[in-house]
Length: 463
Ligand SMILES: [Zn+2]
View 1 (spheres, rainbow, N blue to C red):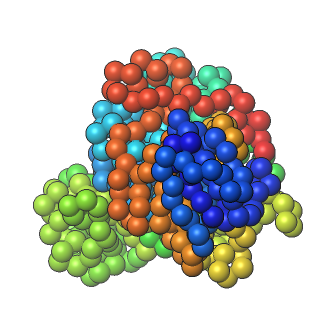
View 2: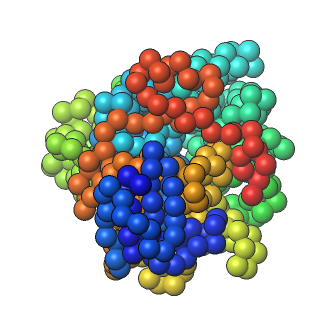
């Protein structure tokens, strides 16, 4: 055996394991999970620690469009082993992942924006854009309705196009008709009809734009109960993430404009600057290795230095809504209503998914099994990654190790290679999660491929 991790509590709900075991790794795969394995070439004592399947953050941003390339490092540092970039551009992912990927497994939903196809593309144009995205390495499309809206018709055709091709399609709710809010979510559910659709960050549609946030979350939950074709994620953060880019004195993102109004500012470049100087809006400031959220003059100066094109966070999410979205189940003790935990992080500095979920474990809101389901197993099923999300023999050796106090990830491996130890990132390169259509692009960019079974995934088949 190349590597043996010894004496840890191993938690693997898929294989019904929760006990003291050794994990043996060979050729990037789990080769054994048993008590007292013989010594390997390398041995790591994990006494007192807890081993879980590698954390999969299904909604992050690590490109020049959103987040920035430091997101890879920031995710690896937090114990993530697999990420899905939820906007692309996929060209940015395949061109940079090998160089800055920190050893992570990387998948991408390519955003379909008016700048690419116009705001009301017909089906042929959408099909063509989808095919090009897949050939460039994406596993599906993201409709960025809340930020860069398409018409409802074009949004629906995008959902149908991806469903016909049996790849993933997700939406940040919103269109040329509806905003990024509970009515936008209702519209998205209606546009999908019976088609499969992942609606991103349910918590962010419940900010009280139409009703009280807790009334909105009840409405969101009812939609998810009534429409089992819809999958969803949510994140645990008060801060959102959006773009600060302005043109002609006005923020270009509709989300940014709404946040400003919500916080009592006008939707102008000048007012946005004031909200940063007031200490309300945080700017993701690029430090040497990671983005740090700063406000007031430090944040303002950086935003100006970037000619306003910096990533921003506004304190607009309800704490109660985030907790409800994380803990609500279909029936008592059953599957989570929102199966995926994500951060919408990456380069947006709020990546500590596992630490945040573990805080809820200490409050007895979630068991360790729940945390594995939310942070890894369910994600592996939605994205057809059958060799991830568990630690059975033959699974990819993607492992996150939690410290004794169950507060943080302290060690992680992807494909059998250490990528982080004590918050120091050691991983290099990346694996690309792509479809058969993306194989050639992956090879051209020195990215080993992982081909998920999307048509057999929980995205298409349910849980
Ligand atoms: Zn996002």
